[in-house]
Length: 166
Image (cartoon, rainbow, N blue to C red; front, side, top):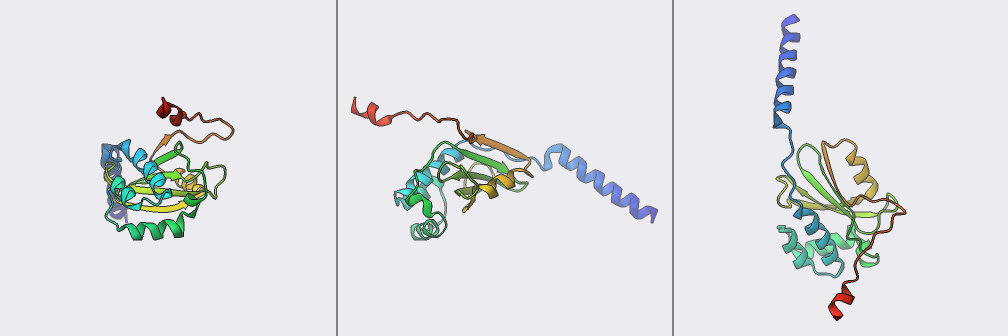
């Protein structure tokens, strides 16, 4: 019995040393994944599925992405698409970059996400609710916010139309 305990203890120590040495560390996240995900949401809202696929460099057909958006992210067709708030989190095996479709005033806001195993390129995509994203953040090893949502704080967005007229 003592040998078994000693063996279990040795394995636990070895696993702890592997984790401490960086074996469980996340790969660095490329900041461009945020902008790609946000741009893809905007492109999908205009029905530009081929461009969204190119932006994310995903291996998926445009009609498949269109069906996904119609089924899972229908708010892109009626909501004012927000481009400010986003969050990325490492769950131990992959990065998830989540972008709420509209201002995340409550947990039911539809949220588009991409996954990345290497922190550089998108390996998948999906949809969830903002509350599911917030719940996932609790147990994550690493969380990176892009303009964390703060209710009641105005977000200033430059008027690009005025610049184009000049």
